[in-house]
Amino acid sequence: MVMRKILVSSALILACGCSKQAPDTNTAESMVSPAVAATTHAPSSDALSSALASPHRKPDNIKRDVYRHPAETLSFFGVTPTQSVIELWPGSGWYTEVLAPLLREQGKLTAAAPTGNYLQPYKDFLATQPTVYDRVQLVEVTPPAQLPLGPDGSADVVLTFRNLHGWVNNGYIKQVHEAAFKVLKPGGVFGVVEHRAKPGSSPEESAKSGYISEEAAIAVATAAGFVLEEKSEVNANPNDTKDHPNGVWSLPPTLKGGEVDKDKFIAIGESDRMTLRFRKPR
Picture (cartoon, rainbow, N blue to C red):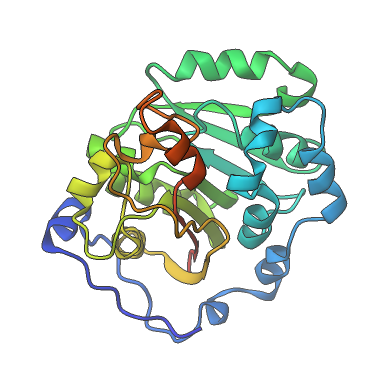
């Protein structure tokens, strides 16, 4: 896949820095050893189907599968049951519900959760199903200074779902990407799902509404050393106009505006999201 140079505003370049340069190569595949490349196939359909159908999942979370496409998304990122996977900023545990049983027997799931308001609720969530979540390794991080994701070169996959705008708003998106790069094995995958702003949007401005442009997301990842391998439109939603009064939180599942235009936002559905697979060069 021919890699294209990504242009981004000077504001993002100043915010994100350029600590590393992507290697000069025409294809991401040329940087991946045969052993690593073999691990990027779609997960076992039986294993993933079993995780998605597990009775431990909350009914309200299952209803969102139609918007979040977990089977297609995890398959695109190449997650398999034997890998070491790190989930960044797991929130209320929506994806942990799927990843924990998928990786429990043969793999490893590490959840990197920031200290603050969301940490204790996530701990409480893990405690609700000890037979499912007992092997999830919880790592508490305090960015930007403390980002102990694991030993350098120890993870097969690092995943982030809908977090980039928060990292921009909090001023540590550069540091999180650098930490993800360090913890991945050579040839490892960095999978990103994020609310997609309109092209050319200032990252600092669009992040306030919960969105980041695709070119900005690619720029910060490549500045950290990653190479963009492939894009997917599995989480795209062309009905999302991205100009809502309460930002992305106007849409389901938050519906921040309450009853005001509620039916309109429900009809739109969840946000338009980019789904990007990056790789750490060999």
